[in-house]
Image 1: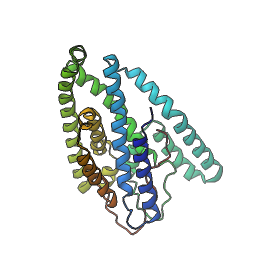
Image 2: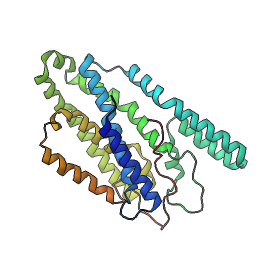
Image 3: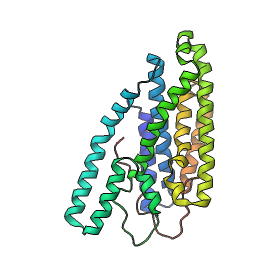
Image 4: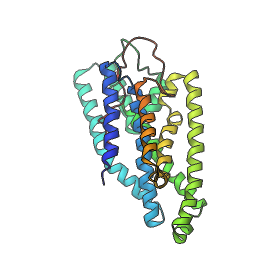
Length: 275
């Protein structure tokens, strides 16, 4: 079932990115739009995994990765092939060689590692950005998909997930605690690493999967605690919604590089990439 509220949040995130690129005064939170996408990804994937565990008492890694491949690979591959073909037909050999390297890293979902090693600067003037630079964010999410399902399976096994299914809802609520603790600890560690990187290496802070993991962890934590959050008073929901919207007015987040020139970012997250 398609979640209209999630689709609405995606639309807001896209609009903040577009508005930031367009230079719309008060809507300068383009980078927060990237953060929102990662939170949504953590929430959606964890919700799917938790729902599967509730329904069947287990998580099928093969089924999960097959669904991800069917959803992402066709469109992602088509874009990479078309980009490389167009570059070969219109650009110089040196540019095509560089783009081919970028495409290769993107095809194996390591674009963020590649661009981080190159020292790619989103604010650099005079240098043409890679046409596949936006694949860095897809790479971060795919790396999350590689690690999180097995880790969640391990946590559920250690906490006696199958026994919890037999014991009923009361025991299931007690299972939420260990899972939430693991997610929270990982999220806090990632956030601390992100802040450290921001002061030490801004490019690495922007592209790092470890530095971005806290955003995915926020979404995962919301998914784990969804049943409890549904019982939250309406007034408190409005307060939290307002508190969450306020940061989008700012162009900065803990993983946002500091602008070193008045130039607008050449390229940010691609809002139309496959999901």
